[in-house]
Length: 399
Image (cartoon, rainbow, N blue to C red; front, top):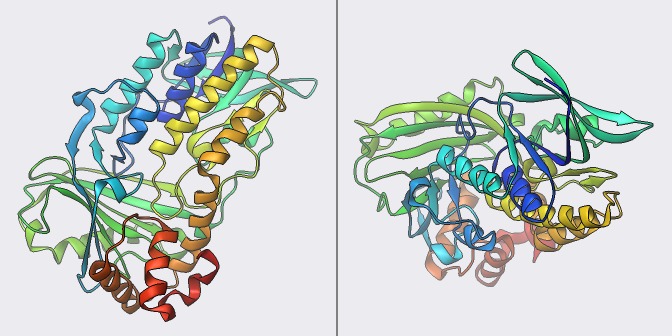
């Protein structure tokens, strides 16, 4: 296959990459979006939760084909079973819609194609092209063909381990404590309990060390049932399955449940990168560490950042300048929107992993009795400080 040329090449067709391609093409960039897999959105590797405001914020056409369920909010359970219910408007960035993620990812990519982006499947980036030290595109392999995609700007949307970012000189290595291993079943024939399927559930404590178990409804008897555990708490990666299986055995409503599929993966739970742009290069979504370090959720943040980046790329194209300086409107805009919260949640996560089951029980009990109007670190800690200052001594710096 002959070499290709474009204004922008986006590596990775997840929600962040496809949204970047959509807005870049919308704003006048000749855009190529490449995806290493043969099918966009598959295999699914997350709980599939998303706050609906991200759909509205990014002006993504609403389509019920990619919605499995709409929930009222979230229920958080402490180790002893104490329950805290938070309605959708206050429940955070992963609660509101439970997606059919494969259909959702295809939908976002389809919107990019509608704006003129060219999509190449089964196309893997193998290197970043450089000339005299300047990035000029990517080398790719598509089935048996190898060729260059020459571009004025390369966008790395290839996940938290971002090879493209590393090839371009960004420091993307992570400590074990900043990576959460995940395993998820899609289970059906789930019985009644805990107002299922009206709420997303989060179960805390030593059942999932330095992580949590989730139950995200897909329909009246089906749900994503998954677990995330910090890698530094696992002796062996396969231990994660044992934690989830043991918890499921404690749930009477899952006595007759059957597993339809199983997926494993990982997610970064680290602080955001200090820099996600360079000359003719930008990182977005998980590649830019735009994942919430407490929840591990990154779909919405990636979509929003992709929109911001796509708009900036359009401005760069008009000026004929894709330098680091020209890309700063994107860098400044995404940080203004989410950096403080991501960094605060990373610091708080490092404290949360030290809590005992008893401390989780005490915290959730107070919040359930008093109520909390927003599921954020600051809002929760303010409530706890008023009612039990000793509980928040570890978190004093965040109030």
